[in-house]
Length: 325
Ligand SMILES: N[C@@H](CCC(=O)N[C@@H](CS)C(=O)NCC(=O)O)C(=O)O
Image (cartoon, rainbow, N blue to C red):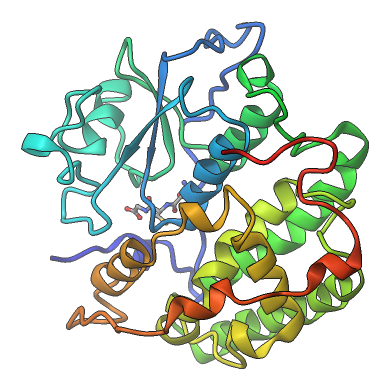
C-alpha cells in the first residue's frame, strides 16, 4: 500500500504543507448558502482518530446536536481507497449507503483528485459533500446551528471574545495542531528542527498563560480549548514518539498536563476520546514513518482520571450553562 499524499505535500525545503480544503460551503441558519440548518438532514463523517474531526465530535456533543446531526464513524485505518465504512454492517454507511467516503466526493465532483478527508459534512438528500472545511464546521455548529442546540448549551464562540479566540487559535494551529504534523512529516533535519522549536516554544507560552487561568480565553470553555485539547490528548500516545515531538511528554509539562486532564474530565471531552482508534490510525497508516505498522501498547491512560486541582484557578467549564448528559 503506497500513500504518496504526504510526500506530494512536502515542499523543496522538506516542509510539510497542508492541502487547502476543497469543499467550503456552509450550513446556515437562514439558508442563504443553499444549505439551511435542518434537523436530520446532514451527516457528519469522522474518524475518531483524527484531531480535526475530533473537534466536531466534541462540539456536537457539548451543544447537544446528537439528534439533529447524525454521526458516521469510519474505520481508523485507511486502505488505498481511503476512509472506509468497514465498521458498519456490510461495510456500508447505513444512511449514505456508501462503502467509502471517496464515493461522496466523486458524487459531488467527478474530477476531484485531492485528498478525501474527515471531517466531512454530507447532505443526506443528495449524498453531496457540503464541507470538509473543519475549522468552519465547528464555528458554524456553535453559531448557525443555535436553534437546534440543547437547553443549557454553552456559547463556544461568544461574540465579545471572538477576536481573542481567533488569535489564540491561529497560534495554536500553526505551531501545535499542525506543528506536530510539521515535525512528523518533515523530510529534512532543518525543517524538523524549525517545527520542533516552534511547537515547544508555543507549548511553553501556553503553559505560562494557563498557569494563571483555567481556560485559554475567558473563564469558561470555548472553541479555543476544544482545538488545543484534541492535539494534547494525542500527544503522548502518538506525537511524542511517532512524530518525534519528544522534548517532553505531556505528562512532563505540569500545567498543560493538568489543563488537559481538567478538560478530559469535563463531559464532552474525555468521553469522546478513543485511544484505540487514535493509535491504530497513526501507527497503521503512515507507512513511511512506521513501515511494520506495529502499534505500541502504551502509554497507560489511567493518569487521565487523576485529580488536576485546576478548580483553584476559578472559572467553571460551562459558566451559567450546563454540561451535556
Ligand atoms: N481537511 C483537512 C484536515 C483534515 C485531515 O487532514 N484529516 C486527515 C485525518 S487526520 C485525513 O482525512 N486524511 C486523509 C488523507 O490524507 O488521505 C486537510 O486536508 O488538511
